[in-house]
Image 1 (cartoon, helix red, strand yellow):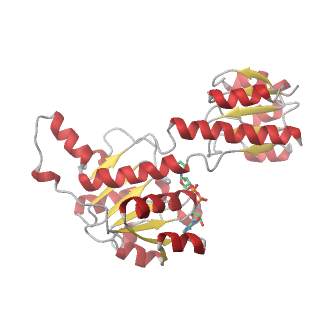
Image 2 (cartoon, helix red, strand yellow; image 1 turned 135 degrees about the vertical axis):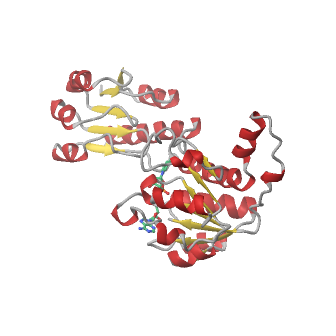
Image 3 (cartoon, helix red, strand yellow; image 1 turned 180 degrees about the horizontal axis):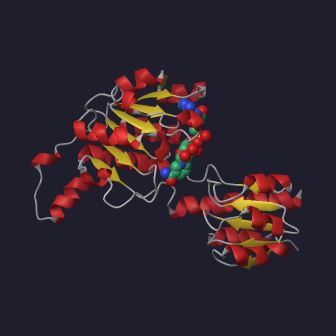
Length: 307
Ligand code: NAD
């Protein structure tokens, strides 16, 4: 019987799959590093989320460990070099949050264009701010997607089929022809995208080539009436340049779920701007995404030990 340590909350359906496949489950939520060093000794697999940290010390203490699974996407809490040196497999669930993040991106677009959060704040202050809340429709406007991968494509699908938006995109590789055809999407260079789009939505990973991809020079290319949506990673945008752009009106607004520094420090300049909607990195934070993430990694684990 394979003994597995579940070290973070996991959806009940995923736990049930492990039980039915005959795994012996040890459940302890977010153990400290010292405790994890003890627990890891005699298990063959461990499941974590963004916590706990599976450090080199933990991995070196493991005697039978074959699999580290992250019920989610980011692997920042796992020492991948240490796992690799010991030939330990690392699994994650990259597709699980796609729909949730895409829906949040669309939500932020509507929120910024219709000033929903601003209107709500004003209502609570007793102010009926109807005149200040003149908005825009999504229908017919140009959506520029930076990074037409899983999430970028899901956003484009909702935008095109649901709202009748026009889709242009920039990616280091072209998206499949059938998807381009389905969405009537045009591949353009970054400069054209920034100059043309009414909404720029970022969906690239944070890698050296995308660090501050959207900097002062790029923000100055955008239309004054355009808005920027970032649900990818904070580091893709130069925050200081964005604050300047929003304050000085080079762009009309922004919807941000991710930040260069998380949590966003209290009283950060972004929190002072009315044309910005902020959410605390909740893109993947849905019951459905968490359920899919749990099930996806559990299926990979079961497959691994079967084979
Ligand atoms: P993906 O790998 O399917 O798509 C990324 C796309 O970006 C690919 O098509 C790739 O070719 C393109 N790309 C890479 N480097 C590029 C560059 N320099 N210029 C232009 N295009 C480039 O990834 P995904 O599943 O769509 O996720 C996208 C990002 O969303 C993730 O990397 C992650 O940072 C972020 N994310 C955020 C949340 C959240 O909670 N807000 C949750 C999940 C993922």
